[in-house]
Amino acid sequence: MAKTGNIRPLAGHIGAVVAGTDLRRLDGGTVAALREAWLEHKVLFFPRQELSADELVRAASCFGEVDPPHSGLERHPDNCAVMIAASRKGHGGGKYNAIWHSDVTFDETPPAASMLQAETLPPVGGDTLFTSMEAAFDALSKRLKTAIEGLEAFHDGIPNFTPYLLDPGTPDGPRRLDNLKREHAGCVHPVVVRHPETGRRALFVNRAFTQRILGLPDIESRGVPNLLIEHCEQATFQVRWSWSRGDVAIWDNRSTMHYAAFDYGRHDRIMHRVTLKGARPLAA
Image (cartoon, rainbow, N blue to C red; front, side, top):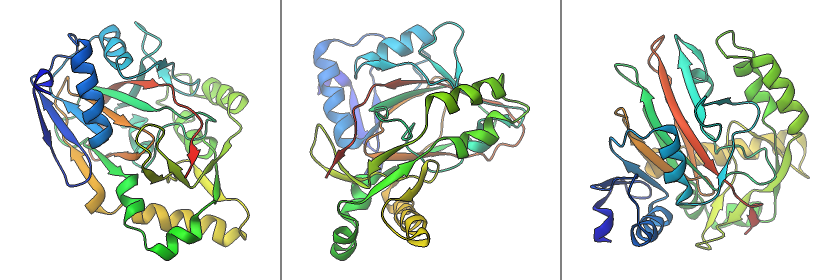
């Protein structure tokens, strides 16, 4: 573990900061140690890396196969595998990312992970919060665990992405929305999933994309996800990161949700993100 520098946990259930590691220079032993720490802590933070778009892609590829952004997202001009998550003068993605979510769960095979770097930051605010869906599942009562066993939920990205892509500050938004509607009709995933690498169980619902649970009356099908998500949003399961320019985070999309705070008004906040290919979520 010494090759990775100092790994320091940040909270009881999730998050660790890695000091003394340059993501431009990763050998096999370092990558193996970082992957082990990542699976344990679910999100790793690397302060002040300041990677180029190509370097960010290379660093992310050490954790898995890079998956290009879907058509509803803005892409980096220097490397199309990098998504630009931007809030410019109060417009764009900032106010629409202020919602607890896991990335792209409306896809049949959601990303296994995402790596994010801070490029332009507001003078105050703009933190990102992460929550452990494994710890949240573990904390459920036995009765509720039994009640949700075997349930499936429908995920759809269109309701969440429509206001963002029709925002006047979103570049080429209407065309991107049309493409998104053609390419993603929504999909069904288990409410409780088993991690393909660790075997741990986690809740797999989120406020942005989970629309309803199948096989329940309407009020229950929408109310049960809200109950579970509210449970997951408790501070006891969370870690919060205050960004500096060049900071990099990588999180396990299979066992976490995240929330980008929109508390910086009309200041710019621009982040670069790379996602890694995942597999169909496994029912627990």
